[in-house]
Image 1 (tube, rainbow, N blue to C red):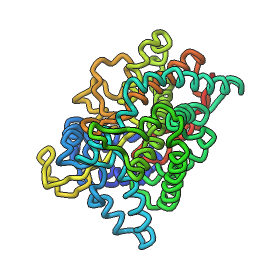
Image 2: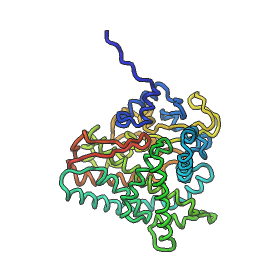
Image 3: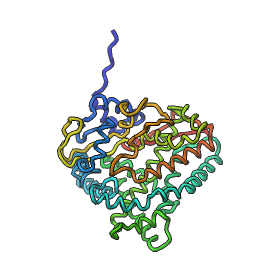
Image 4: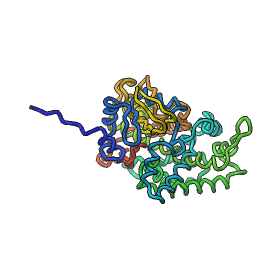
Length: 421
């Protein structure tokens, strides 16, 4: 008699994801399906895990009940991290979280609305539209270098990382020669995982404030001089009532732009190329035959393997989701990657379909915190894919065994993808 293999407890599997167990990082989607089916509003130690599309959407849209970020360090997840920290770590953790709390993705209510309105003046569709030619030039500059070095190259280092970082550096008047050091700081900040990775705290603390001081020097040089459209618009951004950024407000906002402005696009390019060449090579062939499908493909790749897999909210009051009680200050872990593969909302959700018509995914969020840089990410990734298709139609994977994901359960991205051109 054949016995059915018993699955490990859900708590053990989710612990493995949070601890970045290699098998869970490589493919978290089986666990996501299990969460949706067995316990879609799942209380796990110091947080509540939400995995269905409708429930995640409900939380994202109700910004009054569910606050972005850690609600002034009151959220259950960050309180647990603070309670577990040594006195020295406690102070560093507070400093990093408070600085990051000034970024748009952590602000709430009137403060968020005010600073987002000022920031939006620098990220209008017209400004992003004027960048398209420059983005295409950067893409082909990078591909020229790749082509000059032979038929084999590593996508992330040579292209997926460099393209959006050069774009954001150009936009914000940050010298390109600083890109390597900014990459180091960004990697350290990403590894911190919003306080859940205590081992990364020291490096994240040093990197966060090195980036802040670096940007402060950039501001000092640029004020009153010729600047790019975006940096100039941010420095001069003024509301209808004459309201402007203070420097203390602008620093964390710009730091977030520098970090998020290349992080999401890097991961989207890498994850997307891997999906097209390995998971669904027939879809790569479709794009070769009809490059006009690329913009729709970008949204499908955002849905299929979301660069942002998880985002947090904090309950401002006692409430409930799907008949499950939520306590005030509970941290909610919204699994964007799970919601974007919910079969209740997407036909064949585990398949890439670059011509998918119904694709209201949550890759850029929803509601008042919808990603401010969504238009830029779409343009950059569209150009990145169009340029690869144009230059390297015979693109292939050189060594599938060498593919590596970064050890991060929140931001999903490849460390390495070797290709042949």
